[in-house]
Length: 342
Image 1 (cartoon, rainbow, N blue to C red):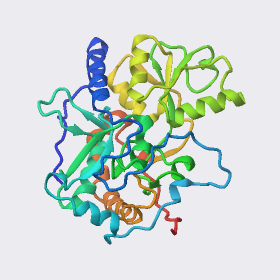
Image 2: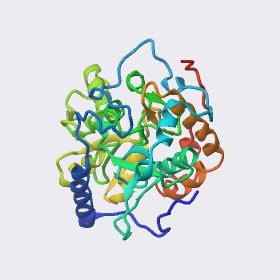
Image 3: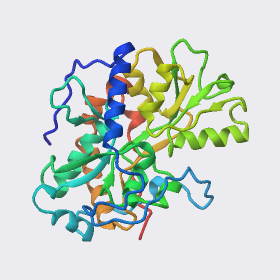
Image 4: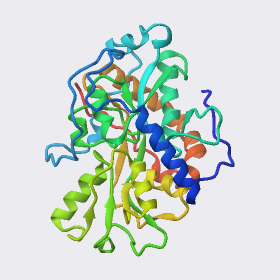
């Protein structure tokens, strides 16, 4: 698979330079966002009513949502056929991604072409190669954190590959592939901060998280149950995780709660912040698709079987080893289980 790689010597952004780049990216990002209540542009053939992203629902009947996916298959079905039948410039896989998550889905400001690149982007190219025979047959759509699920439901995209944690609530709204990455929630704060982790040291601190994220739902629940101090000031959620880093840099927040994989990348962007304590949850990223797109789900699961064996490690080494460490054991997805039958 031909995917352009970032230069080995690329350094993270820090200090004043970080603020300039982050703010510029945030502005460009806002200009590219789709409308939250879009009825679909008709390009995917799956337009439907808009819907808001829910929180991590406490559903006692849902267990191990990362296992509730369909068995792999390379067979075409109605969803894949519709994608393949697109003609001309529209014959592309339409994918919702991030363009501001360093080393996951982002535009390198040091590159003239500013093409999207990162771990998630590598996976998108691999899926496009398998389905359309061309790794670059992709129409990327930048979407904020709180629009990952609505973008699928509204038919704006064929799928979302954007560090999306598989949860019971989300799995009731969209279909997920088997996991392609393991992570967990963690705390990001200035290196000089007295915060030590997700514990009592968060007392009287302002904590930022993204709307529609696992972090925001968990913060609210844990404050209500007394798992974290009642004095924790949970700030109004922001549309995108990167906005929390900006708040931290501006002194408007004392800490950020986010997926450890993303938090590590943000720490690489700004050397004045660091991860505090260990991850306090275990979560899995999956590719999200339309609820009834069974053939596409099965095809993506087949691609992931092959990708885990040949491609996943190389992508990890290129994009994530610098922030998460050379040993990828803790990040590798579990052996997939396909418990969904229909």
